Length: 550
Image 1: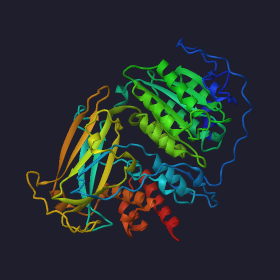
Image 2: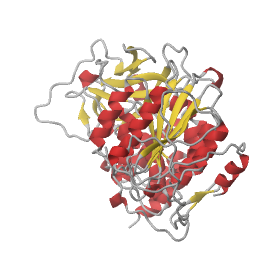
Image 3: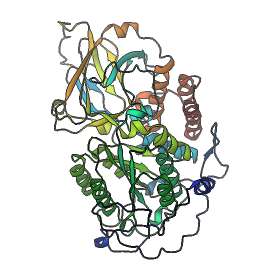
Image 4: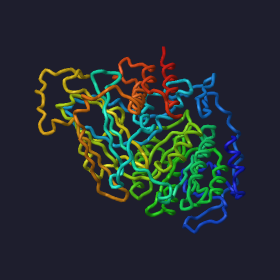
């Protein structure tokens, strides 16, 4: 790859004497440590063993005919398309969020989500000429892939701003769309804390495709270039066994060289790799810093601890120690997205799917601060609707983030994290009192509720969060005025684009609530794109429309 050749040319001349040897070892040998020679090994308590001679590198896999490429302006889809077999990929889709009668269930509670993997994964299917599996589409991740015009917070004690606005629903004149937007404060590069990062790289045989290990190298090399002198990086690999390739260092030349030497081969002892990565992270732990593992894999764990439930239990035990986990998904065919998304959530990290070098730069270079540096943890949102103003409602997306009402005040219930500069958007579709709803009137329905003291309110929004290092949550409360209903107009500008993305996700999921709203209408709602990502979105909508025709 040209990118790989360029990186090799830029290296400082420091070479690693060995590489991550791919050994066909039994799972119980997974604690063996493989290490390369470096300029100087730190005295960190880890025992380093010299590796056996590496196997010959596998033949380069040919570029697949189904790869779409981007020249920075347009998505170029090849004329010959070999579609992915989604039946071999694993997803954990949930049913579309149901409609709630406000009188019976006035309170909606959920954990925030800043993952974006579903957007890039859906894009991968579309550019290959097929619609994504419905279970692979999480509408909130599509919405949160983009940035919106939310104001910065005024003070760090309340680390994010809260914005609410409303518009007439484009696909249902009887309903309205309530948007709740959060924006975290930005963390200047000079003031961010030091980072202790462990790159945990899957080098098993399934990773040798061009869209897997070669792209992993490009992604992690890009992140390494963003590191400061105070940061340190370790590299752990796993195939038939797990091994330490590079002990903690801030030498970018060593990091680049170690990544460049990685080769794919063997089975996948992912559980052993995670265990070793946590051990290495603990050995180089930075107090009051960022301590995070970045797992890069296609998720195909098939040796040792491979059960998702067992992996989740392992990750949950580690997160309270201050070591978080981010998962980066790559490739296709045997991709286990269900596991990738879940262990990132339970590891107090985030999940992204990387389908191109452009996406790698977006996730790991441009968004590194928001990805790594948490400004608020266990963030929960609770919206209570006033039955006198809203008769029915539904939350668009967040199906796997729903919480029980009593979980909101329970500080022991884990929830999502917001990083520096992160944004979170939630959209509710509501039925104003007196308007026609999805659920018809009931024979024994109660009489309308009198307005009472809260008669001027449409809803009441509450947010709970913990500042870094704190065990007790803080509370933000915001009333939503009923006047928003009377003043609601057709969505425009930034709101229109957010609604267009919500419609795109719902149509990909086959949500019947959109009735006959067309792909052309979704595209028109998005308006004239103002940047590359939004322009790409409009093209993806058009592509989805063409693929949806009988």
